[in-house]
Image (tube, rainbow, N blue to C red; front, side):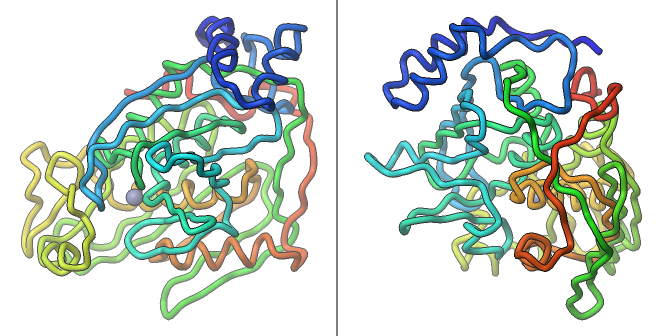
Length: 341
Ligand SMILES: [Zn+2]
């Protein structure tokens, strides 16, 4: 299983420029041979990106133009967000316990600082199996781009993915459990792969009842999920705008319906694009476990708030999950090699 990897030398140069001691130490270890370009995928090891990449765009809720830089990070660093518009602040770890708001998006925060609407970027990071990454943002929210995770996947692929020395931990579901709210639920069961079955039911002629089953293998994230855009209804726009939300929303970054039809002239990317985007959102929130997950998830009509409750139940020592290292003999879970159509 080969994929094109950029020159790891670039990553070294990037961390060279970083003055932080931790990055410098990692750089020195890389030079001694600890970091190497991945040519085959070893799912037992952690991964980061091979070089820094950046882009900019409008953020969905705050409406600001924000610059985004993805930087390589050392082993066991995890995914962290750094607000470069706030001098001297510390990075915020992308972790379920740092979730501070789930209204219309997932927001993490620490020490009074927040980063909002992280779920599409987190889904791309998870789908590309990147463990360690520093995300620098010049504002409180990543750019929304086209409302999907595909631009982030392309950015990560441009940076290339490199293998690191440290073993990767997996989170596995040990026993079934369910969280519910009204007629919504998330059920987790043990499984030797990562599988999601999702059902939505909107009383709208263009959406209605949609179901989709998906599992992470052989580039399936890029092909089936990453390109599904966020969606909303025109009747909710004014109320959300009054709440200070969707200030950057437009038909170029959202699928929007009036009472009868789809307003985007280009139509859907998939006939069932809405349910696929709900899977994308779930993956992005599940990434806040900080680990790749093996389990089967059956979900009906959930959202960020129920995702957050589910993660707390999953992670907070109730015996529903194990954390362990696994050996994979074959290309069982693939990087996003050629997945984007
Ligand atoms: Zn979304």
